[in-house]
Amino acid sequence: MTRTVRQQWLHGLLDACLLSLLDESRDYGRGLVERLVQAGFDEVPGGTLYPALLRLETQGLVRTEKEPSTSGPPRKYYELTDDGRAAVRERRVAWRQFRTAVDAVVKPSETATARNGATP
Image 1 (cartoon, helix red, strand yellow):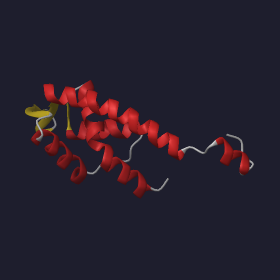
Image 2: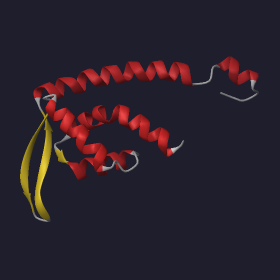
Image 3: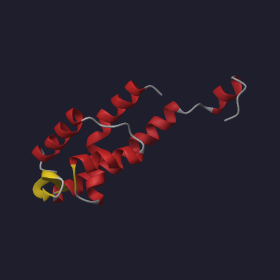
């Protein structure tokens, strides 16, 4: 899969991914990037990450708090609000429905597979 396609998909799903990560635990920007990479995503640049986090904060889904860091300037930590936790639940349901619909369209049908001589 091309990097461009993966980046386009991530842009569409980044908010849901960030909310889900923050549902597990609060974190700062670099920590969120590292967790996304561990999950299998490409490195998410700050120019993509921080506008998404600001958007979630503006929507009232995330709140921030600065804390001192032993390795540099204070870190801005992000955590879910009550509305953010409700949004995570809603987006998980919406994702499952969307994923099911995409799978129904994208996966090859048994007829097409048989026609092409491949095994499903």
